[in-house]
Length: 305
Length: 298
Image 1 (cartoon, each protein chain N blue to C red):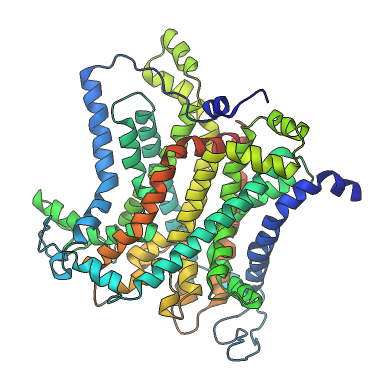
Image 2: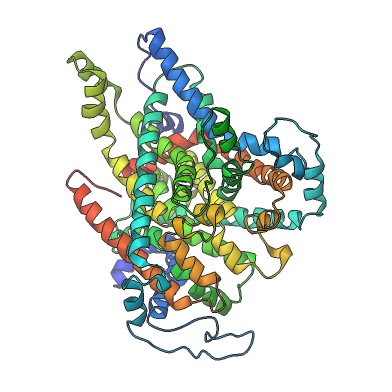
């Protein structure tokens, strides 16, 4: 043990601050959150140092999990919400990847104004999310939004985009796609640039069509970058809170797992921390299962993350 | 040293795109048309906020949009003078929190990434894996326990508490990117530095960090944006006093249910977006090379 430390003291010294911060601010809260899921903790029985009140919540075993997993609407219709979260995540990541890849391929060649296009296309990434959310809420407004005005000018009926219908989900997906494409585009552009040009030239000399070159040279060359960014994209989108919260608020038609957990935290008189924590643990479990399966599938083709 | 910085940068930074081939006029038009349309979609919402920011609130909600309608800079003046909420306080808080997060996050991520890139110490794999898992944590499980912990540390409702929280979300991703970047810097450089009498830390600080500047720029940008735009923690932890809010929380006063002051909101938004776009513009030429190094080799 002493030997180990003597050999790697430098590495451990460099890693130590991060390990301390993560243990304190991630691992510890997570364990506590895990514990809260088995209690009936809420704002009325949590320890409150300001009011000098002792904690009085009780251990309730699996009650929260049974309530949530039963799919009861009083507990957020878990299965329907999970389904919506999967649709939201799938749609967003699919369009992020498809559009990001298309733009990256277009930009990865010599053309005039390449730098300008790149700066303009990355712009949505640079603007803070809450600003973009406000901007889109304004554009989607049913009365004076520009999108309805554009629809009406070409003779199409105006829509209530952010109302109580599934159109609201479509709207937030559009916004999130707009927000997420730049990151994918930049990551994939980097990946494209790391594919040696001679591979493409060799394929071309062998008589491969552009489409064949794309499928047999470009896509395999991008596999490592793609598998990483898709995994990250799924995790981020699954947990994407500000877009939905800032654009549609507590709209059941755009409710995903994390926004519902947040609702339980902050709306209602009681602030149901127990159910919110239960949801948090379930979100983490779903993502862990997904990441494990995904990594196993990808490992057959090479390392991922 | 056999490898100098310039040649190293040439290999790690952007590789030249495939040589220009003969392209038909139609293909050229199609290519540019697609990129122009995509750029317009990317820029338009931001442009429209700029347009609205000069309109009075009443003109901002007219059914037929106009580019100019009674345009003035009154909105900016009202926002900056504090007539519409403590904008300058929010701005100051956000700058402080974002700057601290960036400095601390990049520094910690860099040391961790360097250790993970250069040393095969026991626990390394476990550490890297835990960073991936941290990405999956829904903040929802963490808000109340985090609040308790910050309370115990005496950091609740304060900027340093929020900075630590943001670091814990920014560091894992930044570490991954920087590790990929450091992996691309040959170990011979470290050895040469040691032979020349530098300490391990001296090698890191004086040789490796300067070479990794593009990677550092990207991680700095990422940390800054994380802290500059975060909403949930900021609204949960800093809600008590109006002057302690960050911009992300404060700006919501403009769009409360019964009144939507779009003109003022837009002006405030422009003022908020400017520093972010500025930081972005400074690092954007590093973005492509920086991100790739992280994602290709991690």
